[in-house]
Length: 360
Length: 240
Ligand code: HEM
Ligand code: HEM
Ligand code: SF4
Ligand code: SF4
Image 1 (tube, helix red, strand yellow):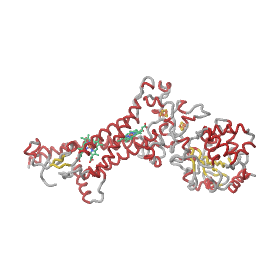
Image 2 (image 1 turned 90 degrees about the horizontal axis):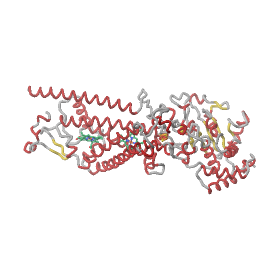
Image 3 (image 1 turned 135 degrees about the horizontal axis):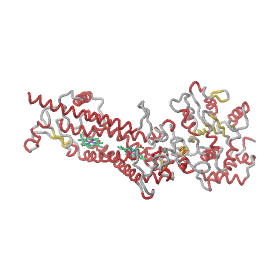
Image 4 (image 1 turned 30 degrees about the horizontal axis):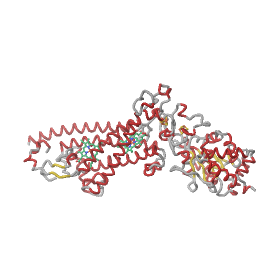
């Protein structure tokens, strides 16, 4: 029975009506940018294709991805997607525990060899043979590699799994390492953010489980549909940026008027995410709308680039903390002083050699 | 010996005949030089204000477009610089041998290094006289390669990569320069490096202008006028 079970079977068993199911399909298709034909295709896939199990594992992390995920805006989406995945394994929200829970992993690995999705939240620390993160009596890195062996694909949730995040901040004592640096032989989709937006997460899960493949990824392995534009490209404060109207100080006139937060260190111009379009908490707001710059939480290394409130990045390579302009001005100053000194010596030399020559 | 002592200082017909003159910098090189210099000054100025914008403009957003104009000027000058750089590379192939100088350093040549050392000594006041050069002297060639030629390519590559962030994933800019983000996944780093690149070029320009003026006075050949007329004039008849 289980071998031919479809998502539709599971959803119905969870008490979700056919009507809700159809609605879910059109909603999700819309959020993925598919249109009505896409909704039909989704419906069909969910009704006929064999259910794809999702195993959700947790490494070194703060669980903010799970927190975000279970707050998916539309209750319907939440119910459906949760019923899709929590059935299998998610050690934070599932009912099973201990031996019973570990048995699920074993079973999925065997029964759905090469067919299940491994969703990873957090990352494995590699130092001391992985002893900084023990899960079920074993280093997490071992469990991760073991489950990854037979997975169809891996979802790297959040900045931790995608890039390393704060636990990988210099000097990274536990050697926390993003998933794609540990697992090399499986397709990996990165869904960065700290946390990623709930709708983005459910969208990604639904796409993969529905169509049995990863959506189109960009150069960094992120889904194009949610990460191909910067916050800055769709920010509603952008007209103030182009006009040259900036918040210069917290609580100044510009802040009250909703000017651009560029000078307050907004990282919108370098951050790829869907915040300025999808927004947060069911589309209520997003950081910039609430008056605070973007901190670039979905970007690689955002935790190690100096203050969130500085426009120019802090560079530590020179042993002192400085930004490009401070370094440049110092270099130009030193060279300028060198030129003046050189010119002075040149002038003196010229006078003295001339004298030598006339003497001769 | 210096400029003021040569007979031909006043450049009156007869005396000038004594002096040897060689055609070094062909017109395309000279045009490129001055267009490029103008573009770089524009880029540095506008780039600086992109990094640290001017004080806020009063009034409605719809009535202002200051940052937009600054960025537009930067991008326009950037395109000009890029196109002229391509033309300059083309000229390195079809032009005379001096047109190639700034694109390589003959690290394999022992003679290059010994003359390079002589030039360093000249600038550190250890040598009494510089050698004569038709094209760039070895130290100039060396410095130009590392402090303008490479940085210019670097600025064009990182500049267009940053530009592609605005024009989008389907743009030709992204197709050609998107690989930059495989090396630096966070474009914040590309901004920082692009910004540092500006300071490398600006430091070069300071030294460059100083040396051009100084050599014009001190060395045994014409300098600044060579970049205008293309002719290199030698001020004395001695060998090397
Ligand atoms: C010598 C040449 C150049 C200099 C000195 C220069 C300088 C700068 C500086 C200082 C910045 C600000 C960086 C920051 O702090 O974020 C900048 C940004 C930028 N530059 Fe250049 N640049 C040069 C060439 C180019 C070229 C050839 C292009 C290509 C079109 C280009 C495109 C850009 C873009 C797209 C930005 C980002 C603008 C933004 O974020 O709004 N630059 N440049
Ligand atoms: C942004 C400013 C500038 C840049 C990036 C720049 C760059 C260069 C480069 C790359 C060359 C080598 C030309 C070649 O072989 O193709 C050169 C040569 C030269 N530049 Fe500039 N330049 C700048 C400004 C100036 C200024 C303001 C002067 C005038 C004082 C000047 C005077 C010269 C002269 C005289 C030469 C020829 C040197 C020789 O004969 O060996 N440059 N410059
Ligand atoms: S607030 Fe940030 S994202 Fe919005 S326009 Fe300004 S710099 Fe760009
Ligand atoms: S606005 Fe920026 S910092 Fe805030 S959640 Fe979005 S990507 Fe992260």
